[in-house]
Image (cartoon, rainbow, N blue to C red; front, side, top):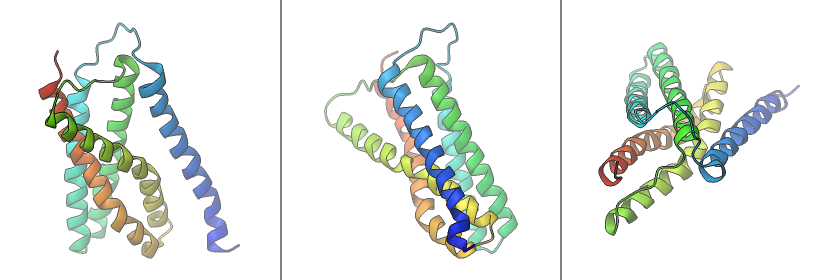
Length: 178
């Protein structure tokens, strides 16, 4: 069995998991709306922004560690960044499951800035899960040339998504009443 053939189950798993995650997110944000629940999760956006900030910090430290040749430290930092981003995603989905979508209250040029940041954040975030899974898979299989190729594209995207997640949080806090 060739290497490409042996990777086929992973790529199928990756595609199904990524499509399921995106579909679930689209359902929550565009179709479902707010859910009447007795639980109040209005604190979660701040927690989620903290997970994004932690992910950005861990990603930067992971990049610096691999540049310095500290592979073991790099591995732990990148797994920690993945865990932090995963906790963000769970918190984000949970919050929006209960409270629905958050509308931006700003007007004029700031709304355009917000929408441009949000659009780029959303579009690029769709690549993070499948690319992360691919990067981890090839690192686990010790195929570091492919891992590096994915990582060179993934790191700036993942870092941008993490940082803009924090920016979006602060823009929503500043321009959304209540």
